[in-house]
Structures are given as structure tokens and as C-alpha cells.
Length: 104
Image 1 (cartoon, rainbow, N blue to C red):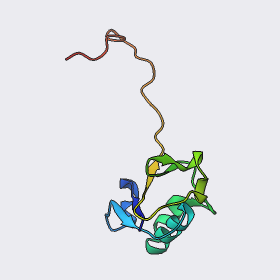
Image 2: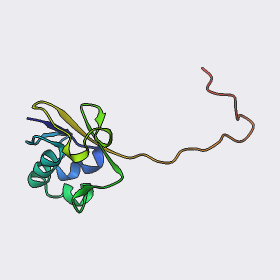
Image 3: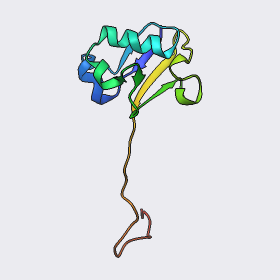
């Protein structure tokens, strides 16, 4: 059975579990099983029938956006990882230490 890796922010809906099993032959089926078993995940994960734009989904380290999307096949024992997108950053360095890099 596939295993879904749950990000920290969603673990409150999976009783704190970092990984849960969910049956399915493709990503859509696996995620629907996840939602069936853990209903609190649905609003965080889906916008209608699509995964929310700020959630990236990987099957065995392959981004499903570059495979077959939600129809990406999932083998028995595969890992489906849910990864919230990360944005932002520090921007360009400023000040007297700008450009000096890290020092040991």
C-alpha cells in the first residue's frame, strides 16, 4: 500500500502521524483515501477537485506536475509526499558585512 508523508502543519489532522497508508492506483485515489480516513485534511489539501496551488505533491521524489498530475500512477509501497510550498527569502545582503559570506 502507498504511504503518504504528512507535513508538520497537517499532522493535527492525522493524530500526529508523519506517515499514513492510503490505498489507490494513482495520486487522486490515494489522496481521496487520505481524506476519507482523515477528513480534516480535505480543506487544507483540496480546492474543489484540484490540489491547492501551495501544496506540491511528489511520488517517490518525482513532482507530479511533470508526470501525469493527479493521474500519476502510484505503485504499492510508493511514497507520496505532500510538501507545502515555501516562498520568500532574505533578499540582497546589506550593511557592513554584505558580500563576506559565511566564516568558520
